[in-house]
Amino acid sequence: MATAQEILEQDIPTVLQQKPELAKDINSVIHFTITGDNGGTWTLDCTKSANWVTKGAEGTPKMTVTVSNDDFVKIRAKQLNAQMAAMQGKLKFKPMDMGLAMKLAKLLG
Image (cartoon, rainbow, N blue to C red; front, side):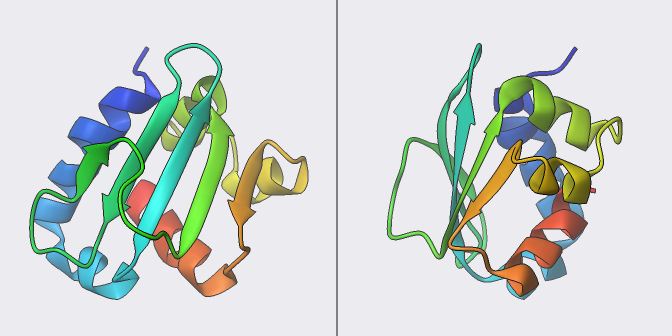
C-alpha cells in the first residue's frame, strides 16, 4: 500500500510532468498536512515550472489540506470519495477555496 509521502513525492510530480497544464491551472502554493502514521508536511508549489513538491512547509500557502495518511491513500486509490471525506471532516481545507479544491481534485483524481 502506498503512503501519502510516495503519492506526494512521486505520483504528483509524475502527473504534473505529463500534464503541465494542471500546474498552470492550480498556480498556487498548497500545504499538505498528513496526520497519523507516515505523516508530515509537504508543499506543492504550482507557481514553479518544475520541482513542485518539497518536504516541509515552504512559502505562504493559498490553502492548507489536512488529511490522515490512510484517507489520503484511499482518496488517491479512488476507495474514498474526496467530497464525502470532506463532508465527514476527514479531509479539511483551510481556507476553503472551492475552485482551488476542484482543481486539486483533477490532480489527485
